[in-house]
Amino acid sequence: MFNLLLADIIAIIHLGYVIFVVLGFILIVLGIIFKWKWIRNLWFRIAHLLAIVGVALEALIGINCPLTVLEFRLRYAHNLSEEKVSFIGNIIDSILFYNAPMWLFTIIYSSFAVVVVITFIMAPPTRKGRLD
Image (cartoon, rainbow, N blue to C red; front, side, top):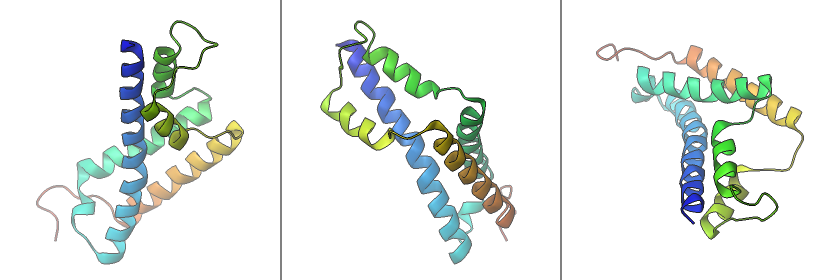
């Protein structure tokens, strides 16, 4: 039972990671359009760029996401044939996981990383005190 709780916590963290990448991108694009100064925050932009580049590199190298691996190991620790997903875990997993070929995810993640790099160039981050 404790493993299932930990698996759900990992799934929630995983969802938060995805939300950070997607929502962060949307806010950066809106910030470029509306000239929001806060989107140039150096630490936010570096964290956002590293988050998606990390995902793209995992896909390009062909390794599974560590959060996915950890969640599945916890969820199926005792019996690999028996599915053990809570209500919350089921909802989160339905948001995070799709049945599609890996090459498609690699293209999507890599393309998204390239677009984030482009926004990094279009609206480069600045150090504190340099937000003119």
